[in-house]
Image 1: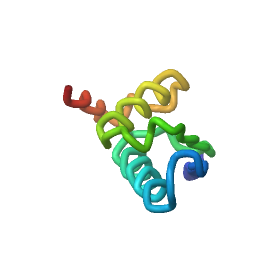
Image 2 (image 1 turned 90 degrees about the vertical axis):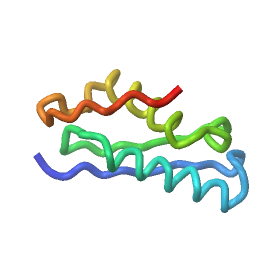
Image 3 (image 1 turned 120 degrees about the horizontal axis):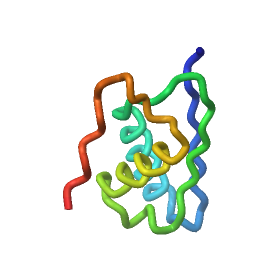
Image 4 (image 1 turned 90 degrees about the horizontal axis):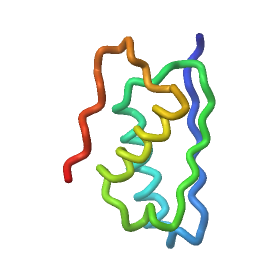
Length: 85
């Protein structure tokens, strides 16, 4: 399979440009650190609550959604660690 591609949709209602860019950077880093199945195009859409969420909260949500979509690579042997409380 080919490489996976990602698009980030951060609407203006999330906040001003600085806030939207911070959310985008956090989402990008969270996805980079996860063992994903390759060959998919994913669109990540953030909601207003993402502006106040921590990196670990965003990562936990991504893990939950990617598991539900069966896009986490179980054969990679790297199970993502749980988010701290």
